[in-house]
Image 1 (tube, rainbow, N blue to C red):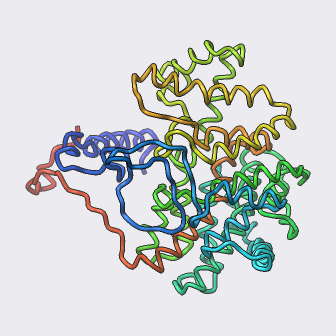
Image 2: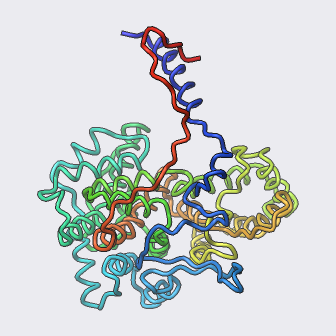
Image 3: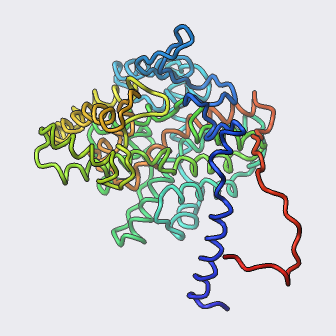
Length: 456
């Protein structure tokens, strides 16, 4: 057996070689017209499929030129602001309605809404002994990894896990939509107890609560929450439920579904995609960045102090030295992110309730100043705006949702969109996704073992 020092040395050698061989000359991407990141040269996504689930609009084409416009988001052809205003004006929680719309393609009637809500409530409970055997006995420091493992484990508890019959797939998707809040909450409790050394409390989901209410009920020690808190969390779920077929995790859902794999494997892959800091992890980054800014700025209303600090961030002199102002800018939106606008309408009310109006005002001031600083430092005319992740972390913090649950909250919402995309791929896809990678290796003759040179 190797000692730990010997193992470390061997791994260091292998890592060095792996990194060296993985480095491809960047000029070759231009030479072979490779669409890196599945992006065209103008930043738009390479068209690889069709969808009716969601659509994002951020520009119009006028005389062959892209003209930026205020961002718009559509679910199944309905604009998100109309959907949100529709159920909130009538005092309803919206996520269940959104989930029904995404899966079926139609808004529910009163009867369908009630029946779908009851269906979700009846599916929330986990299989017998699942909590003890699959969650509490193997706690994870990262809730998203535990969520992916739990989703995969549910395969073993399904009497018909592999069938791609649509009635079976829809059943699986509905069960996952119902169970995600429970899986996430219990995974967090296991982490909190076994890793952080805090008290363990496991509460059963309340059959009379909506998805948002159940999340707050499950993750809070006393299980209590205000109507405004539940409403704001419900809004977050609605706004994160879907974002067009081009985002990474929805693309992963299509790609893995196209192989004929089972629902649990597909959704676990989507969870892994969402975990990445370039995707679902952006809200954590934006929140921590703003915490750092508040620690370095004496006056939250001093525009010069704030601009100076943002300048340091862009020049890689502050925060994580990445040169990024997290939450500012988006791959699609230019003038505005419609989700940000809707969140802000309710965020101020929540900030008043939480006694954090000064922090909310700071967020709005940074949102205003960041594009100015970006243009000055980068000498760029690129139009940037605050995206939904910019405010999401702050809103979660006002809801007393810990940072460890920021991305899992995103997953609890996006499972509805993933389900719709999986069903769409199974019905309309019909062909395995197989993108091309050009090999640019030079041919090499085989070398006998005794004649090989060690890795340098």
